[in-house]
Image (tube, rainbow, N blue to C red; front, side):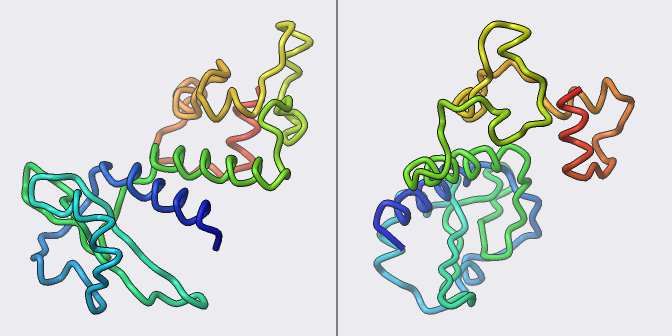
Length: 176
């Protein structure tokens, strides 16, 4: 993995960490599953306290975890630390991962941030024809597209947030 990709991956982990997780109580002794790695611990020392949101870190080699550790707290109110088994609500956390992946694809020349979204999602309406300007990939990344949020659309369609909606159904709803 290139240094840039490693930095982006670490940044994504740090940005994603403040999300509150559904947790069972844990002790500091259960926050690491492997021997401590001082290099990784130094990177996350700033967030490794009982008064700080933190993150869960996993290092994989050949598809297997070689290091897992939690840093900081999953819930400051209840004093619940982050562990390798912390469950995070992923709703808005996926935005950072999606943006980081879009940046990596753009760097690799596989995605154009200035492209009309119909380049990659042809089923979407032709906003350029309707409004005079296209919705671009960058608009999606920066949340400036004006396209309604899926949860608001689900509500308008009479769906419950608990309902399972396959990706193709969600895309069809957004496109409508």
